[in-house]
Image 1: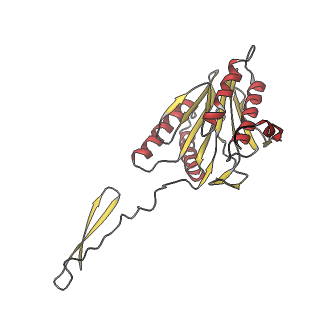
Image 2: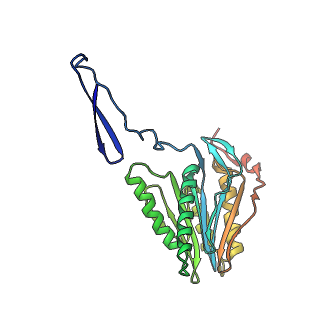
Image 3: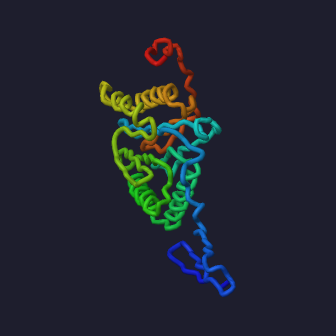
Length: 258
């Protein structure tokens, strides 16, 4: 059998030429070599990321769980990534894709350091670059299944932005991904708006802790253990693991779902 091969982009297609002693109706199909390499659905996933600005900095929080569907398979996945002394990043969604994004950003940071020009990757620059990265992968129909939260502090001003798997992005004083955008985000905004005087670091931590506890009660994919990262003019500080004690006495007051 003679074969002809045609190349189109990253795909190679082969066409079979029937011979004299071969069944003319026989059709042989060759599949694209990378047809099985695209992530069609996430496997190990992570849940909500919360972020809030305060007077003099930014704070974000995320739990440390990794899930197979509704199964809490991994309980020590720390996903708050310190990019440099003024920028941090965290994602919700597929954990393998987060590792890929992290490796990509690390390579960019190394490339910036090699230049030795005195400049480092700022939060807004990383945020803008992530919109291009996520949109580029989406345009190839091979998206990174993540929502990325970028936070930083530079030149006396905090930055907080979110980029989703389609490259859609927004900046705000309070952000959240996953189920947290429906459950926790209103509480975060209310905490910042109702603060009497300056909304400081301690108040931001209290608001984030309250919302992480709320997610533990309401989100089936949320562990009672989380971390809070804070970015100020003094640098990045990532807390040890904080555990929510939980108070299930409120369950007795829930009615109408029997």
